[in-house]
Length: 81
Image 1 (cartoon, rainbow, N blue to C red):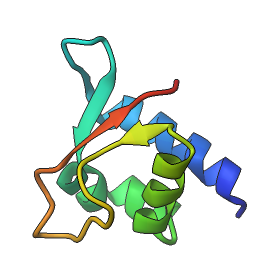
Image 2 (image 1 turned 60 degrees about the vertical axis):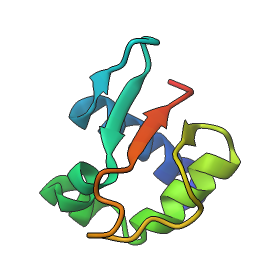
Image 3 (image 1 turned 180 degrees about the horizontal axis):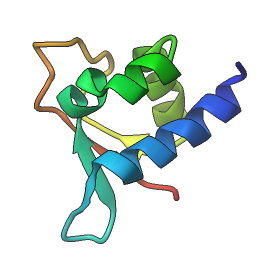
Image 4 (image 1 turned 90 degrees about the vertical axis):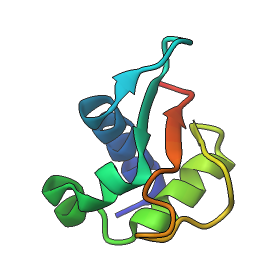
């Protein structure tokens, strides 16, 4: 799969799993995405896809690398729909 395609899929999954915040943007925690069965089957390297999306300014979150367990409560915000 190419990166562009995976980033588009990530956008769809954040909309599906997230809720709109006070700024009207969709947001979801890393733990919710990581533990979702559909996302587990969809993304070969979720952390890599998130990093690529962050570099492209499609999403934002605190930190560089998200790890399951440690960063489950980190909020991922969708900047571009």
